[in-house]
Amino acid sequence: MDNQSIYITASELAQVMGVSNGHAYKLIRAMNTELKKQGYLTIAGKLPRAYLEKCLYGFSLKAEGGAE
Figure 1 (spheres, rainbow, N blue to C red):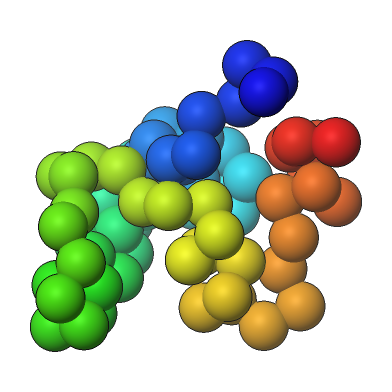
Figure 2: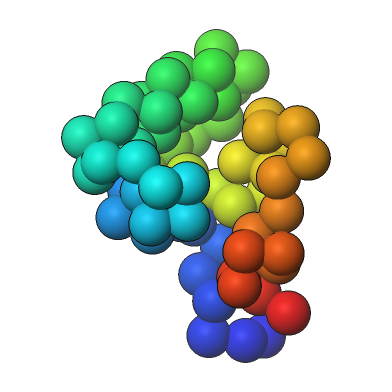
């Protein structure tokens, strides 16, 4: 396994998407709420990378310099 965490933090999300940290936290809260509704456990301020890629059409962390 590489050094890449399975979770993305708000600061990483802000950098990748070009938004403020506050907006990144808001996005993570919204997506974590959806995960909770589906019965998943969530971590405040972090989001599974796979779920982020699923939610954002055409978005790939690999293309943005993420895991290779």
